Image (cartoon, rainbow, N blue to C red; front, side, top):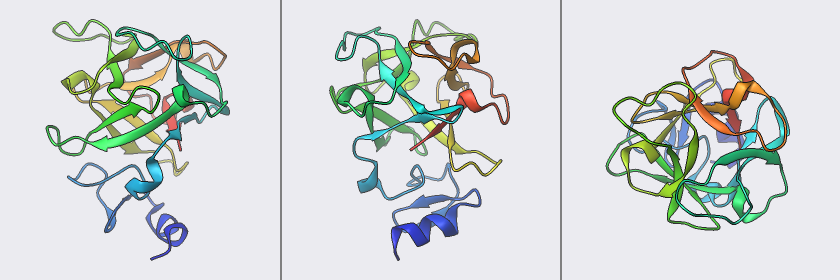
Amino acid sequence: MDKIMTLLLCSAGAALTTTGCGTPNEPGADLGMEQSALTGAPLHNLANKNMCLGVSGGNNFKDGTQLILWDCDFTANQSWDFEPSQTYPGYYWPRNIAQTFKCPELQGTSPSPANGTRVVTADCGREDGAWAADPDPGGSGCWYLRNHFSQRYMGVSAAKIQRGQPIIQWDQIPGHPDQLWCL
């Protein structure tokens, strides 16, 4: 089936898997298009599609480097591959293509990371680096990225959609565009 046609058929909330539409959190479900199309995809923020998820300092990939919102420039530090997690079915390791072994992770994941915990770079493979993509029930075609460890959502600090704003986790606020991410 043609990718565009399949995307249109799946746009009513079902995730597109490599075999067709499915439930977003079923094992093997992916982020809304075939896995091959997710190589190096930038994540735009729904509140301003000219702003993308990036790594502070460009190519600074030390563990603990803050993820930020930045003008989309389609460089490697703003491009992400989504590898399905074998450890946590229905979740992904969003790997930055500039450093494929680095994933978004929660900073200081002691017993229960609170609202406002920063999202930083770290080696992929830990529970707090696995993220599910929950489709926006409002039909925007974008996703809420839910952390496996905390069950909270990736968003922009203080919902301020501006250059350099830190990325944090927060309880889901339905329809809040700073928590919605688009390919």
